[in-house]
Length: 357
Image (cartoon, rainbow, N blue to C red; front, side, top):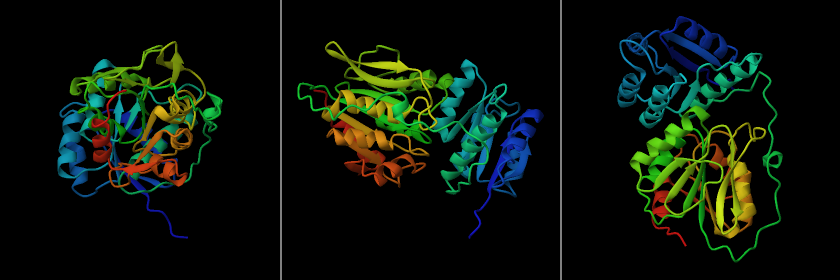
């Protein structure tokens, strides 16, 4: 059997203890190698002259040259998948969202090891680096550490019989994304008119960043973009971004459709889960729903998109060429969950021509 090419990693962080911790964690995966550790971007540049890694882990807040400046230089000269290491501060959240705009593909929030859960922390770091590497080198190695069980949407929301309610005349657009999704979502939303049907969006992202992400999108868009709050009415010209620590569901309330925030187990190892959102769309909106599954690693959203298709909703999977990581859409296509396979620009054209009813 042909051996997989190791994933090479460059660690850039001004903290010696953090550099050593990241190295020790990553080396628990036999398919990951560390080609260097740099305490600032200048040292990193010297390493890059002789070795080009598959992935860079990059601290945002560093002396001499901040991580954002370094990231912009890297992406302009020699794009490499970058995993951002960020602190839990307002400044850190804003800069992390900017880093995703500049081309970073994953986020790790400090501290990333919870008391008594070291093995989960190790697996979390390894998975982030694997996911980043797939944006370029398509390498993925077997999991070594124990991980939480993988639940389906059944753990949060029961599937109802196919909805055939012809009295529903409100269109709702549901979008799911993971790795590479922040830029894809911005591209889709920034040109939408106020007449666009209401949007509900799940982007896999830590809760510390989802509000900053929504606020940042709102600066670029004609439509209003905000982090979802329980009971928010879904209405034309408004996009609601799921919180990073709760499932987002759509439900009928009186004459309106609203969002419900729901705690519960991880579904497909994610909370919020795209499958949960899409199932709620299938249960409550039926044929008036539009489901769009964008770039991302794994299979979250694939089965939910199929459930939406079974209610005769419009279902779209992003094509491989325009994906940063062709994982979630690929799994949906395997299930024949999509009615259309479209590039990001084609999805953009579809949405801009769509008007609320």
